[in-house]
Length: 307
Ligand code: GRG
Image (cartoon, rainbow, N blue to C red; front, side, top):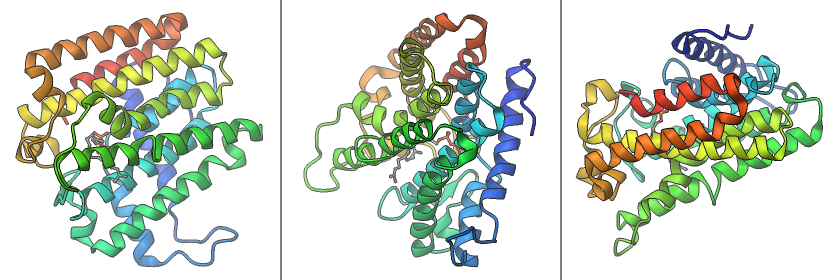
């Protein structure tokens, strides 16, 4: 796998998606690794069902492009990106379960528990989460064990109690799942639920590239702005798009009576907030000059996406 040429944003995104697909297929092969005993057929097939052949691969793209800012080896960044995508796919599988969002459609296909069953979906999610941590500790990620350790810890914090899983809990509590609806701080909730993995994609490059404190901070700021812009775009799509375009049901937020950026800011207010976040992202990247160009385009892609 060779790094994409620095031209044309769409081509770069496609190339990373293609290489991520190949990387995931290799990671999710049938053959067990040393210290594994056997990879049960039904489980590995379910993991492949949910992680291959779909998705924009935005998170791996952020890892690859934030790493490119520091000249990190493409293969290492791609592997770290695949680990992040495994966690993303796990979150989608578990989020779709009857006990969570109870969704039938994901990436334009039946959700995993519909195509298989709930138990297989739970286990496939568990195994995707776990393999991500196997991947980021591998020697090919970085020659320095300390760098691998920092990356692993950052990934755990993005995915765990103070990140995505915690955000999901706040979301369910806000829907009134455990009694009265709890008040929702939408920005905080989304910073955790969806923002944390996207931010990780941006700081991963800084960690792998052993960036200076100020460079790390810049990518951290950029990642936070991009994460919020992504979620607002998602909330806008939920009210303005349709299931055929989204590959999942539209209008789900309203049906659940959810507090979103759109219910809080209104459609125009939400759009203005996206513009402000894009400006904040650009400002954060200014220290990288031309090296930040693809990440700037990535923020625009996130804000203007149609699915
Ligand atoms: C179950 C622990 C646990 C967490 C679930 C992130 C999450 C928390 C649930 C996802 C539910 C959801 C649809 C959130 C909206 C934002 C989002 C993550 C959309 C899907 O991400 P994309 O657009 O999807 O990057 P693709 O399919 O392109 O990868």
